[in-house]
Image (cartoon, rainbow, N blue to C red; front, side, top):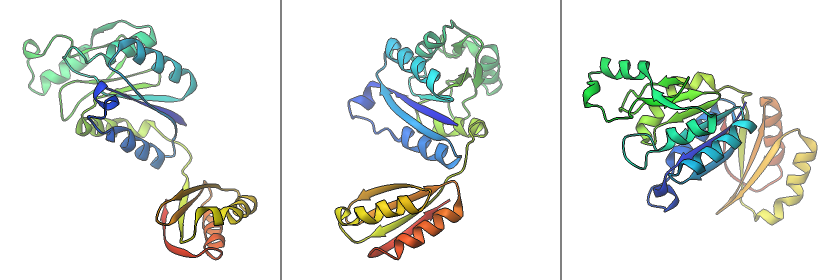
Length: 233
């Protein structure tokens, strides 16, 4: 399963808000074996949201959109997603009924709070008000991190893929000095390799096969000046 993550908000593009949602979602999806192939931030504009969502839903198994839900003038994500899907926004009876069960009077809700793309499944907001929506592989979640995370957990089981095993070998050598050994590693083992320089060089070895990863990491560790290493499963 592959996926794209789209975060919506002018404040993200201006650097006034750190996009922690994309990082959290990528980590959770990767942990479930889902390959995230795009992370894109778009402004609070219906046309931009519609264009990116329409493009990505044709390319990926799932598109997760966060941000821009609510009653204010710049909360236009649902409109953008509806446009991408060729749907109208309409009052969602199940979303409204759920909010009323939680103690919210419909007369006190701002107009449009429960307007979702026609035919969509409402995703209930257990720590906020604005509902999310799911339709045709597109999932729309709130931008408030606590609300987004809680809502994602209710649909997490819908995201599955091949689990990838990972070990990291930390080499206390310049990255340029490691190139030949990295090439040998890739030729000897059926693994993907990432090299991340810093104070030390972190070499990540990944594969769906746990034994292959362990053997490759052991082989490399024996051939570099190593620091600490870690393993993620």
